[in-house]
Image (cartoon, rainbow, N blue to C red; front, side, top):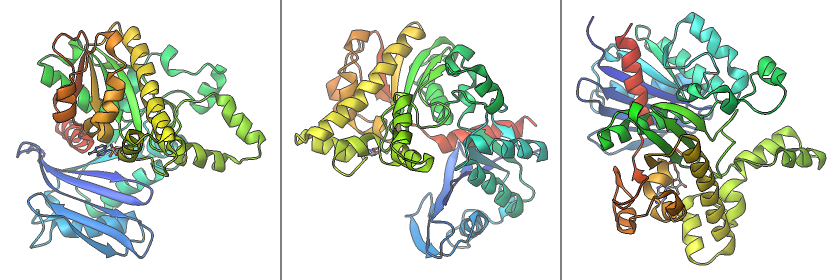
Length: 404
Ligand code: ADP
C-alpha cells in the first residue's frame, strides 16, 4: 500500500469549521487552509487560502457542518485556486476531538465501534463533542474512501497518576459520572515537548519540562520523561490559570454562593467561562492580552491587577510543578500570548529567579521562537517554542493510518 501523503485536518466547533491540508511527502507542507464561521446562518463567513496566495473571503449560506465542508472542499478542487485534481487524493482525515475520556489514550482510527464510544462521551463535552462528531460524519459523506482519525485534546494527559487526576470528593462521583481531571490542549503540549526536545538536542524521555500554553485558553503541563504528570485544566477547560475570559481556579464555594444568590447553572457557566478572567478583572472591556498590557503600561490600576493576577497564577503552578517533578530542565512558553507578548512573559519570568531561571531581557524583548529567553547561567532554561496543533494532528493521523 502506498504511504499516505495528503492529510486533511478538521477542527469542527459548534458554529465553525476549520481545515488545513498537508502533504506529508512534501515535508509536511501546508497546501491550503480555510474556515467557515457562523454555520447555521444565511450569512456565514468563508475564508480560503492556498499556501502561495493571499486569503480570499466571502459570505456564504451554510445550514450545517456538512454544507460548510462541501463549500470548503469545492475550493480544494477549484481549477484556478485549488490544490487537488480530485477529492480522492485525500488519503486520510485527522479530526480534533475535545474529549477522549479514559477510553482514548492516543489518536485512534474511527470505525463504527469507536464512533459509538465517541457518542457516549458527549456528556463530558456537551458543547464541543456533538460538533466534533458532526465533522466526522460530514467527512464520511464527502470522502467515502478516506479513513478518519480522532486526535484528542485529552489523550496526552492520560498518564497522570490517580492521586493527581482525581478530585478529593467521594469516589462514587468518579465511578458513576467520570468526574476527575482530564486536562486539555494535549496536542499542543505534546507538539511543544517534541519540538523542545529537538531544539535542545535531547530525547523527551530524558527531559523534565513545564510547558505553558498561554492563549485565550491557557494551560500548563508538567512533563516528566515524556509523560504528563500534572496539568492545570480539569474536568473542563475552566480550571487552572486566569484566561482571556475564564476564571480558572476558584474556591468551589464561590459557585455555591452564586447559586444561593439565585443564579442558574447556565448563568454561572456564562459568567465564569465568558465574562471572567482578564476580561472580568481588567476593567477595560477586553480580554485580549495586548489591550491589558497597553492599559497596564498606562497605569490603569484594574489592568495592572489583571496582569499581576495572571502571572501570579502561572508562577504558582510552575513552582509547584517544578518541585513535584524534581526540578525542571526548562519552562517553555507557547500559544498566542506565550509566543508573542514579551511584556506578559516578562511578568512571569521576573518571578522565576528563585528557581534559578534568569531572564535575558534582550532576547525576551526582541527574539522570536524557537529561542532561549533565559541567560546561559540559568539552572532552569526559559524557552519560547511556537506550537502547531494542526500539524501535530496531521502527523498523528499519518502515524495511525501508516501503522494499520
Ligand atoms: P486561542 O486560545 O483562542 O487559540 P491564541 O493562542 O490565539 O488564542 O491567543 C490569543 C491571545 O494572544 C490574545 O490574548 C492576544 O492578545 C495574544 N496575542 C496574539 N498576538 C499577539 C502579539 N503580537 N502580541 C501580544 N499578544 C498577542
